Image (cartoon, rainbow, N blue to C red):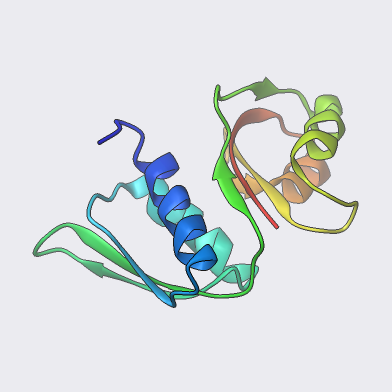
Amino acid sequence: MSQDIIADALNMMRNAKKARKEIVKVNRTSKLLIEILKIMKQYEVIKKYKISLKDKSVEITLGNFMECGAIKPRFTVKKDQIEKYKRRYLPARDMGALIISTSKGLMTHEEAFEEGLGGSLLAYFY
């Protein structure tokens, strides 16, 4: 098993989507993963998630998405470089989102650009 909880969880979600499964159980969790799931829920990529504190797992009900994944290595970007990575990871202009870790918390590339912030690229989905 990998050390990257986020990459593992997003890969499990992608594989479950390809296998036409509705629910994924991720056996390891972190605060960063929960924050990413909150953003994905806003974009209806996932319908809901349920955190089990007893066995430290998350049960995710998948929503409507085609692809999701972690960005490795975690590139640091300035606000004027966001467009370059948006073209690299997203298929079309108004489709999907990059998740960026900024000094004001996790946000999508659109929110970071509006606030004039850069940060570290974590994940993408569309």
